[in-house]
Length: 357
Image (cartoon, rainbow, N blue to C red; front, side, top):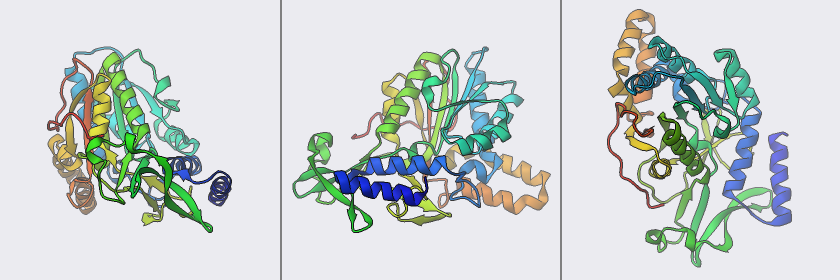
């Protein structure tokens, strides 16, 4: 199905049954987008941290190796990655893990046939899963989710003169536009926010909450540790964070659905609480830049530059992109989780227990 056909299908649906939710629109658009392309890299729509430099995946691998080595566990381990892209992070992290004598079974949660083909070329024999449910439950997990939660569809509620309503996608001629739904939604809004100003928008992500609860339950039952890395916020607030990127530039999310990457900021307080509620230990939340610096990325950059002096400027630029406050260093966060009895990991500060949602 082409992006034009998806837009036509949305138009027919809305014309026949009325406006659809933002969550519905985002979910179908993303399903089409990821099923039909490899979106990563210079020739794609966006670049993720593992594609910026091998240093990112190496730091993740070092963190996992340190926690696994101090856990006292000497048996089998499962390396699990949610939304592994081209397999770049997995390749770099596994290389470091194996250097420390840790050789886990590799499980990738990936629904895109196009990306599975790329991952197979890079990683060889791995096991793929459509979701976490089919990942084995017979050994501790070393789990990584990098830029996974931001691509899960969000639900938006908007404050109108008549109270809170779900934000919907309707038609204005041939254009997709946002409108307020008719059904009252005040009961779904935290009491502290119900009297917000007209026009205020709040977002929730049911999919992210479900995934984090499953990760928490797995860590509680199987043991292990997890890193969840994404762009987002520690304290929830008002406003729509839905955005679209095509060809490395921001575009209108409601134009040509299925042809651009749609994302929304991650509510890390809600994510942490979902995992904690399912039994995981929350190790803390850190800005990506601070986390990578604590793990020694500057020393790794210096070693790479010394080994390849002709790449010194390239390596310095990659270090700044990953850690700089004006680049990915402050906007991107790292959430650490562990199973009961597993050790803390480096790079984290404490985290308040709950979000308002």
